[in-house]
Length: 478
Image 1: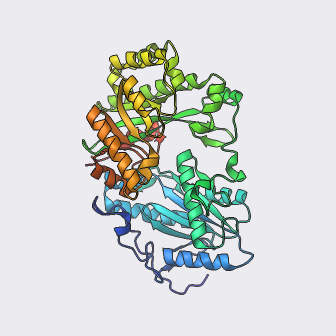
Image 2 (image 1 turned 120 degrees about the vertical axis):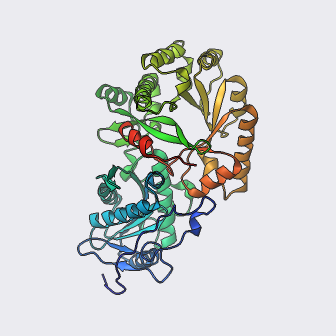
Image 3 (image 1 turned 60 degrees about the vertical axis):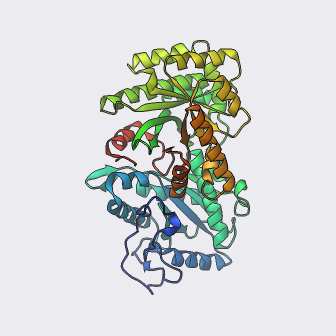
């Protein structure tokens, strides 16, 4: 690689160092990680990947793709929880953190690879000489190992995670726009599925909706059997992760949503969509629900003992759980066993579930009478929304992430969110926006009147041992 234009590495500017009224597009660019076209500084590192500005990165990418025999991969890497680092340590520390991430990635890669920061907490990596999806996935996972060790920030260790969306040349095209579009599409799939690396399928660069997975990573989404689920339960492979829900009105993390994950011995970390259908067919879904409820209550008891007395936990349940005659008793005995008041627990029911029979409604009403809150998740995506509000003792609504995604840039999304905010306000219900990933979304939601949010902008779902430190160090989010 040519050394022309070499310079000392400039700081990676913190994307969150601006007022709430600004958007990501307003942030100033730094020479090495946000340069203007034609001025991308190049930082050569002997035996390691080069850190370059975006302009130089995409120019080099286009040059590489112009070679007929070229075979390469474009990685878009999203760093989870960067907003929390800013909140806990300030923007100067956030700047240093971004620098450390960039250097770690470069040190992990080969000399003919490239690294840049696209903006916010998003990085891009060009992997040269990648000839098939399997080797691309292996290289991406090896790259993520650069983030395994905790980052020391102000003498405190911080563990971070990341998701990767990938595209391949020539499978996804031979121009920058196509590869970047496909990689971003795959990244969204990775975050929604809760897995580490996703490769977009050929054709994803032509249609965002067609972004699925290549066979190289399809094993993560292959159908699992009821026997596998049963064996996983016996081996203790199902774990509970927690995602904070921030209330900007009070400046607190008031609730943690408990989310089950399966640490499969060969397929890695699986999200519920990959195993719950098999669990339901095998009659094991309720077993998983009870274990998650017990684990979440046990963790909440310990966090409250550490001083977080007002903290609540939200647990996702299915309509099948509510239909069990002993369900209300199971919840009550679990709370009693962990010495928790009913008001500390929220039960989330997705709107996709059908909760129409009288026995299930009676179970929900019984729990509500004792102080357990019921939340309707994914509100607004199906016809059952208003009927649930009429029949069930609902305390809160969660705006579906599909509406949150385009809020601030789609009049239709803004109108829907405003309507849901109006319904919640008139009925005295708490309203939570889920899937908040960008500052633009956060600002617009607050402007519309929604002040309770969760999403990767603040923190991904993390294990219980990481949440304790998060609660201790997170400053008020006013």
